[in-house]
Image 1 (cartoon, rainbow, N blue to C red):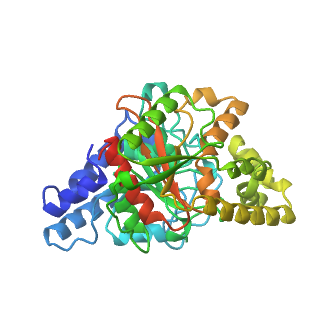
Image 2: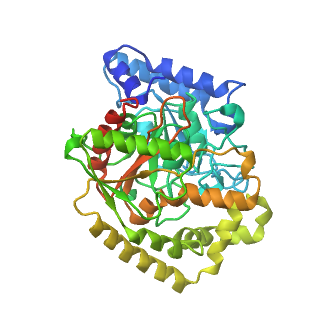
Length: 447
């Protein structure tokens, strides 16, 4: 499949026209045998065709608005689009007042000429890492689609759209891993930047302290390209040699409970990086164990989510996905004093982690410890909660750190998708994505 980066290169050389890519994406989205009906909550077919056609004229006249002018991208159902209700994967907001302006990221994409093909499905209100949605249906993971495995969440439709050719890139959100988890489970690349890099105005919140806006695409360069469009300041890629890399592998928490497929892919990736000359240091990082107690009663996410949802959750609890509602309701048990203590604990924890990571270029860990289970296997509420906690366990570390992270595929072609995560501290995005490019090349995955 052509990547966003490759498509952009073809446009710049005149080898292809944007209509070719957008028409193909729209055709895939409307395929009756595909997942389009579950991937998109709203499609913008005619608008996207017009955007692509206008971009085609601009490319012919050497007046393109950006490197992605006319290329098909999707946006998560958390972003405001002027004149529409923002439903966040829920039926509760279908009749909510229409947005009076586009979200900042939508404005950025529009100004870049992107052909926005639609709003993608998601876990209701973004509060799960599994991607299951009982209101609009759950898009099946493209890997072994007949088995109907979870796509990962909360940006479920975003990942399936890219993996199924319905868009070349997707913009989603990431509060505890919601971009990186579906990227890992669907064999894609997902980038969660430092939260403050991307303007979140017009984005329906889950937890303002932990929310960030990220991207999903096939490879690192495509993620970098899409990120450069929605960010106020594009990242400058550098060329790094792995023989100079100093990577840390935490020994606490993040390597526990891995299944066989993840273990094999992880060990293969680590061996490849060592053979390429990278220095890999096993770091105790026992501070990670403290997250269990900090999140024991739902943590910052539940506390802030409850503040936003309290009135509706009390008035119409039956309208929520029960698995989402129970997580929101945990926030009701936390007082203002509890929340204040959590913020203090988080800041002290961040400072200690930042100090422990001094001198390292990145943290390495499996993005998630398990491959995608089937949707049917999570019908049991207890099983749902157990797998959800596992899926969020590693990725949520970086949101608590207010850092940046990228997940890229590390499995062998044909095997179950497995993600390798590179992560770093606040503001280290340019170095992180540059190191990720070097790692991707070493793993020979769409390099």
